Amino acid sequence: MRLRFILGEVGNGLRRNSTMALSVVLVTFVSLTFVGAAALIQMQVTTLKGDWYDKVEVSIFMCPDNSRNKANCPAGLVTPDQERQIREVLETPPVGDYVEEIYYESKEEAFANFVKQDRQGLAEMLTADQMQPSFRVKLSDPEQFRVVADATAGLPGVESVKDQREIFSQLFSFLNAATLVAAALAGVMLLAAMLLITTTIRLSALSRRRETAIMRMVGSSRTLIQAPFMLEGAVAATLGAVLAVTALFASVRYLVGDWLQSSVQWVDYVSESDVMTVAPYLLGMAIGLAVVASFFTLGKYTRA
Image 1 (cartoon, one colour):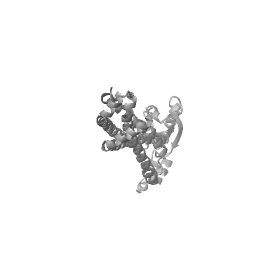
Image 2 (cartoon, rainbow, N blue to C red):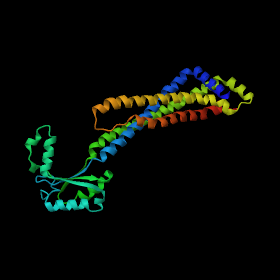
Image 3 (tube, rainbow, N blue to C red):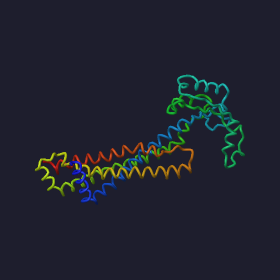
Image 4 (cartoon, rainbow, N blue to C red):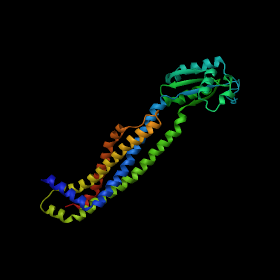
C-alpha cells in the first residue's frame, strides 16, 4: 500500500513539474555524456600508451663520418672499439637491467631502410657511407628511457640519443587536454544538474505543502513524506544517465567502431564493453546527485 502510494505521488509530481523534470533529464544527460566521454578518452590514452610505449625503441645514433656535431663527434666516424664500449654499457647493470633487446643497425642497413621509406626520391642523392650506424634498444620498462639516455649520451662515438615516444607526445598531450576540457565541462553541467534537481524538488514540495501537512498530522513518518520527492529527482536523473549511456554506446559503436576503425585500422580503440564499464558509475553519479540535492532541500520544506 505504501509503495503504491509513493509511486503514485512520484508520478503526480513528475506530471506537475514536467517542464522542470525534462530540464533535469536533459542537463543530466549532457553532463554525464561529458563525464563518460572524458573517461573513455582517458581509457583510450591509456590503451595507446600501453600499445605504443611497449613497441617504441630508444635509438642511439653513433657518429657518422661527416657529423656536424663536432662537440660529440670530434674524431669523426665511430670506431669499432667505441661501438663495443657502447654495447657493454647497454648490456651491463644497472643499464642492462632495463634493456630487453639490442639491435645494431649498420650504415648499409640504415640506407636500405631509408630507401624503403623514401617517397620523394631523396635516396638517389645519398649513399650508404653517408648514413650513420645506430643501436636500437627496446626497454623492459619504457618509462626508464632517461636511465639509458644519461648512461650513453656522453660516451665517445655517440652523436645523439632519441626516444621514439617523442613522436607520440603531442598526440597524448592533445588527448589529455581533451580529457581535461571534457571533465571541466562535465563539472559545470553537473553543478547545473544539481541546482535543477534542487529546484525541481523545492517546487514539488511547495506545491504539495497541504498534503505533507496532512500526512504529518496523521502521523506519517518523515521517510514516507520525503520518499516521493527524492524519487522524483532520482527518476529524472536516472533517465538522463540512461540517455547518456545510450549516446556513448551509439557513438562508440557507429562513429568509432564502424567509421574510425575502418579508416585507421592499426589502433586499438575503446569498445562497447568500455562503455558498459563506465555505465554503472554514470548511473551511480546520477543517483548521487539526486540524493545530495534532496538532502539539502527536503529538510527545510518537509520537516515536521
